[in-house]
Image (tube, rainbow, N blue to C red; front, side, top):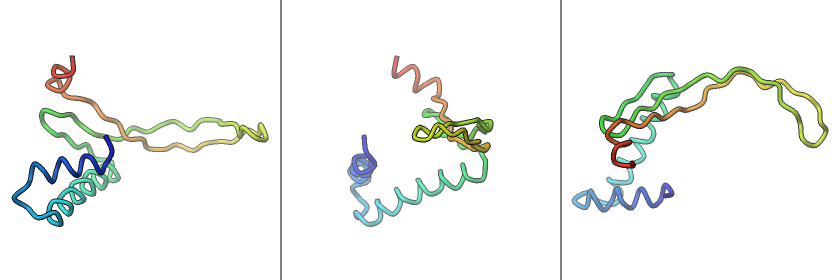
Length: 91
């Protein structure tokens, strides 16, 4: 599912709101999630799961064209853990 598909489902479920209002709400939700993760905080949505960041160690990479070895610095990556309810629905 793409972002546009998710937005359409969001608009359908909130039919009492105008398209502009529902799109603005959707964008604000995504922005809040991004900002929370950017701060390094954990976000939990009951019944769905939790989002957090994890720190990846620095690694030695290799340029595929030249074969030159490069050092990739430490970085944060998003991490999602599904709730028990979501896991039960899927299995």
